Image 1 (cartoon, rainbow, N blue to C red):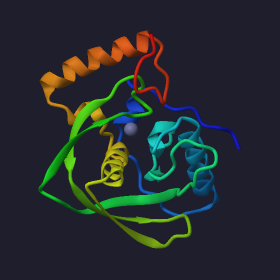
Image 2: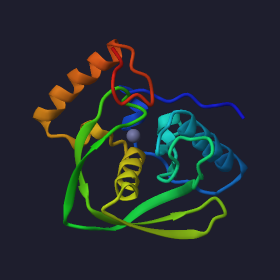
Image 3: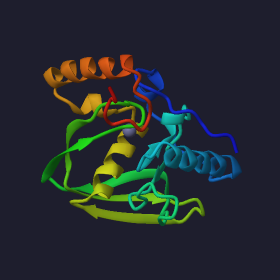
Length: 183
Ligand SMILES: [Zn+2]
């Protein structure tokens, strides 16, 4: 299987609403497996289909894998994921994104979420996450399916600075998986 390239911001595919998956067929499974491969290759904890240029509602997440070959992989495949409940309470944490390499920004998210999604076998699954990386990752990846990146989650003032920081990181050669630019 070919390893898909990561789409890097700015790119209009990252700001486009993705279509729902109509049928979990061989093609969707192939896309999802390719996404998982790209996520692990680039040391991410999540990846959404538009990040490989596929405008469909497919997400892969693994918040358990620590980057070591030997460590356990726990790949979650989410087809047409929907946030069905989220807390009023929020938390702000530093987030990175494979499509916005070299930088991380403080992003405010709900502390807890409940997400429903189909898995690759077509079973309707429910994920409840609270005060952890999974809660952040679910919200970050589902945002991608609706054309929302970290930049859109920042205040207009903060966004100006963030875009500038990002342009500097890109100019310095940042690649997917980098959260800091190496001098
Ligand atoms: Zn992202």
